[in-house]
Length: 171
Image (cartoon, rainbow, N blue to C red; front, side):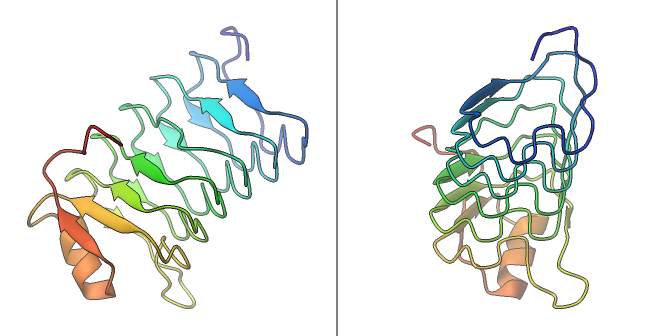
């Protein structure tokens, strides 16, 4: 998207089956709700620094999306943001992130490495079923700092975790 674009409305690219690569505008502050939902051919997204929020279902069901870089400016990853992104194998979440929404990484069957920084202080469960944001992502191991909110969350929800102060640079 051209750098002159500041805002893209909800569902702007929904069901665009031919989109393979996208570079978002450096003037955008959010990836809007359902922006790329069901873009099954999307393999690469360039999210610029300056984006603060990845909204509800922004990349939900982008089944070809592979390991997006999430910039340090992102503070919120909302519910269903990356649901069923089945080609993602590893993610390093940014140091300013505070919120992970319900089902944000649900059904990400290939996700094995997820680094969650100490800044995260809220991880939402499903209101009705108490499912975690990692529902049916059975291969995921969360990497997080010792004594962090995320470590406590992982323990209380029976999620595999490994203590790590910083992300593994090979991921």
